[in-house]
Length: 291
Ligand SMILES: NC(=O)c1ccc[n+]([C@@H]2O[C@H](COP(=O)([O-])OP(=O)(O)OC[C@H]3O[C@@H](n4cnc5c(N)ncnc54)[C@H](O)[C@@H]3O)[C@@H](O)[C@H]2O)c1
Image (cartoon, rainbow, N blue to C red; front, side):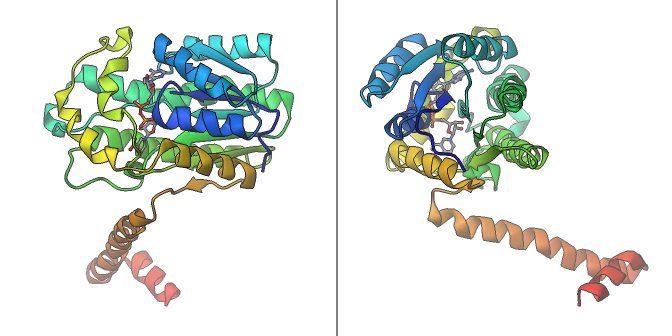
């Protein structure tokens, strides 16, 4: 549980959408905000917007898919501001609309590079620094509702796979940091009104450079109706304040998660029947014990 007031907060993907919403709400809560993004111009515009809340701001061009770039950002913050106490590993890209059998390695490398390695790099850069300064701290990783279930209609396989990874990394991190004063949250929103359908605009040169990805664009109309990034930012601030792990911003997705979990549990019921039939007694015994 951490009051953001006066703390230095590092937010990736802060030039747009949810990252900008988080940055604004953290600034409003009194944090000093470092905005990090791969796109220089929108990053500076976002910094100016966040600065309107009155606190100190810093913009650092960062490619989260590159460990050296995240390390360099952390070094710069330490030099200029000192200890970071809030880390929001939020930058991410959408890659929808293509069946798994057609997705080629440059695309896999991009979506895994940003969505999964972006979180891994954030953890590897900042956790040792947070441990070293020992002050109360908090890490928020942005996953998605797609990290808890796979959308059945939008061909979101690669994206969902990376977001399941973000949830797993966050759960593992929470376990590993249990004995410390470092809290962890994982943000799992459904539709938020951002520019994520234009994700290909920020593809790093190392991963092929900015491209056109028309398969993503259908999402633009869908997410226009989504939750405002400002509300999502407010949920994040409340989670930091209260030490909440799962940040589930869309109540309408509860049913999806219940359905997925029922399906997993049905796998036990099925195996119990088979276990009894084939004489795999440990399974049958486990069922008896549960009863
Ligand atoms: N919009 C939604 O409906 C939604 C839903 C669930 C989860 N999310 C997640 O929220 C996060 C933010 O997405 P958004 O919707 O605000 O999208 P957005 O495209 O509006 O913002 C993402 C920002 O990340 C930046 N970025 C991309 N690659 C980067 C890199 N390699 N290094 C640094 N910055 C990089 C982009 O330049 C952009 O400014 C993502 O992780 C996304 O998966 C979004």
